[in-house]
Image 1 (cartoon, rainbow, N blue to C red):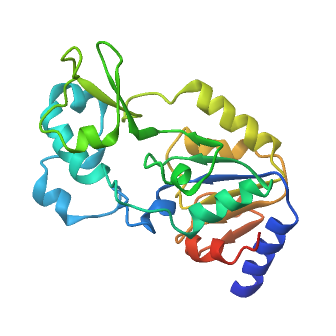
Image 2 (image 1 turned 90 degrees about the vertical axis):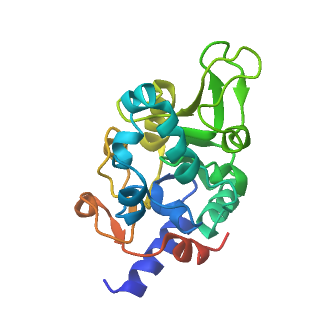
Length: 243
């Protein structure tokens, strides 16, 4: 099947489905200018002693919170980013009754900013931060505009982002909800993820239908089980969908 035929097959699948679940990763947000911290970036080597996977670990957060927050403010808080065509189209499709849930590995809140209502955030969100002592809540702007380790204005306790760090487990309720929506879907679209990070990558195994579409700029380990695998820009592809 040629490229144009694949794109048309994808559009036909979307048009013929009314219980679509979208499962997305970093590639959905890179088109909004948010960097994928796993990609090779010389800045990390120049500015930081450790790779991102070490800095964004629970152990590092506990041992070196000042350095954790230096990296976090610099690399993870892209608060001026705006939703792209994929975010916006998913919100339109949900409003039209075709998309039932968006499941995301991203922590940037762009799906909600675009208007999506049912968003399951597997890795949490930079927009929720809480005091580890009194559980008071703070927004991302409070973290970004502070210096050093952010402290609670009420009790002086340390503030932790509501994001899943390496070594931490996913929220089980969110995971169970994701499994439910995927298992009930008539079409599952997986976009902008390399499907190598578990347990999130294992969610595809719960899909029981015959309209599994993988959209990623590079090949993934699951391409062989997909009904349709497209190596496309997700924003450009979704812009073609008519609602």
